[in-house]
Length: 234
Ligand SMILES: *Cc1c(COP(=O)(O)O)cnc(C)c1O
Image (cartoon, rainbow, N blue to C red; front, top):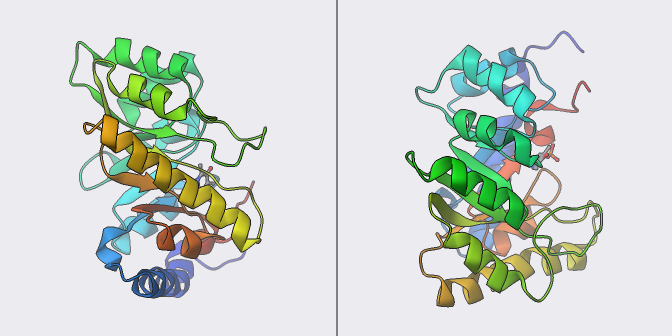
């Protein structure tokens, strides 16, 4: 770690990031206020999250339940929306539900059913269904021709409020590959909403390296780690 504080880091990175988001929105003829910035803080200590809140960020994301829980514990829920963005094992579904306000990574029918059972008697749970739009084996998510039917089925499970969809593009610079992944999610979302109007409008797509393409293709939430906090410590 350098000696720069997370406040210093964010003072440099956040204005640039906001500019990238604004430029991308403008180029797409969209309003930048339609793109929510989720600060992904995995691998960074609680000081990074405090600095993010101090800089006016309100949406914080983690990719592991084990890391989400102590951070929620340390910072509380007031004025923060907590996002669980990483792959979630079914047996940790209850813990994720308790800690997060929105789970982006419902990537299988099995996990959806598990969350549904846990949430049906309580207040319900807000989720996004993760779709694998690139057919990369290393990526999780609902995939293939049956994706519309499967997400439709998930959206009708009791206790689940499906706010929209999420995807991760392959980690490449090739704009065509990125466009295929993000436009694929947008088209699937459009087809889905024709048969399942209860599915919400959110499209969680775009990370530090590909947010411009994601915003052009309709992203409503970008999940940003590196471009805000620098390379992860681990
Ligand atoms: C780490 C992570 C991000 C942020 O990635 P960066 O490239 O650091 O911006 C976004 N989404 C998920 C699911 C992640 O695990």
